[in-house]
Image (cartoon, rainbow, N blue to C red; front, side):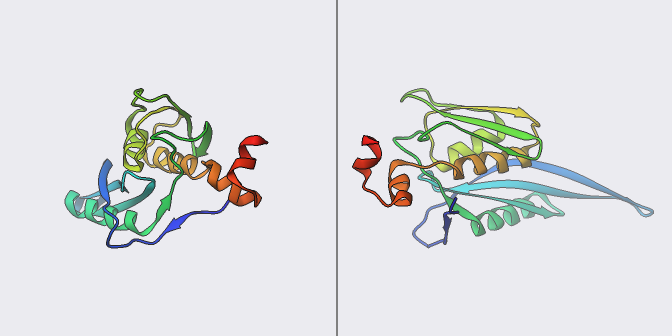
Length: 170
């Protein structure tokens, strides 16, 4: 499987979504120190997605760091007519995700962290189920791993070295 990394250009309009903010407490002999971690997803709503984790003493700084980290690891995802090309299952840690194509008008049937990722990548109609852990960090990573496994007809033809018509004729 080839990873479709994307270099960021000035013409790519990326929108960021905050998935989760977590307050972390470090207890020292001087008292408690609070810091924040934020997981952010960025996408152009047309097949490009990235995620990042930012940690800082303030929420806004953590979100800004997460956004910058997300812009550094963008990937291209196959989307066909506003949905995913085929069913896929992926795992990351304890999180398991199942993503299935849906007919037009269905909408994004997904919860929490998966919804943020699917909206950012530009999927409009999809059925998604998360099983196992509901940890937002692992859910985001599992969802992006599942989306990276997607292959459309053009990618299949290119990998096999044949024309798109031959892919459909079998």
